[in-house]
Image 1: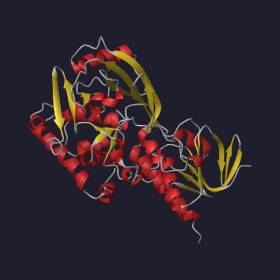
Image 2: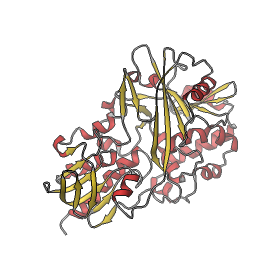
Image 3: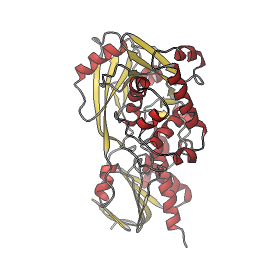
Image 4: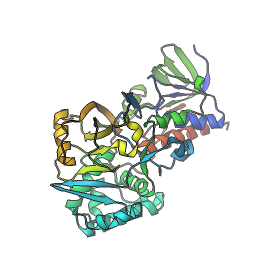
Length: 412
């Protein structure tokens, strides 16, 4: 029998770390058990030959509400991307940017050959509404799929298929845009209000920064949990007696540990990393395929935004594909030649990172994006499958779950 504590957190991803931070701030005894050899869950970075290779292309948005509660964003030293996208259509490469962030790009955006001017005005109105209306109003709106919401906003097939589907498929990992319109509203809100970027030391810097204020002796790595029950957690070393258990592992693992928990469908994502001496673009901007080939969701020269991701004199390109059956690397290389409009013959394929359980599916109904976290008898569950499928959702869920734990432990 291991030592007792008030709360055991199972899982050291973003949700588990956020829960630990709130419990620690409240002075409640806790322990965190992580099965792997590092913290961060699905947010991880591998350092290979001077390159920083995130486990799948991810970005951090400065407008995530819970982010500033947990980290000093300035200390992450974010390399920022352009607030916009490039769209490949035939031999054209159109540049569309947020005119409030990139005012010099407004004329080119207005005359871009992607959809009509009316399309762009309607989309701007949609994004502005998401950015300015209160969250409660956005989440009280009739819920539908993201595709239906875009069509309800009056957007044409052309701009949906040539810009919004390829762009949003990389955000939601959902080519069909079946994701809830309430999730779409929150995503548009964050893109309109914040900037996206990458920490200088890779995305793994985020969980490290969240964990930094926590006592290291309360966090146990390489300690998988075999079973949870009210007031008890079973590990290979024995049982831990506690007053509350927070299950903050990924959705498939959570469903295994907590029988009866709804199983969540997961989306798959694959990122191909290439290096090159000469970058195919000089700008830190996402490039999407407007030709409707539906092979690559997006590609970007990461080192243009964050030079620390590649050794001196080299550049890192990340290309992401949605779906469980990624194409072979030579097919992606040929696609990159078309998208960038230049040869990739001298590019080096560094690695391919397949993430079979990358993000929870979030079809309607998602309601107000706050699913129950208290399961009864001192059992709680946290993760982005309880809020929105995003970094913000994981952080918000962990923080909210810790709040419910504190309320449950408070003397009546």
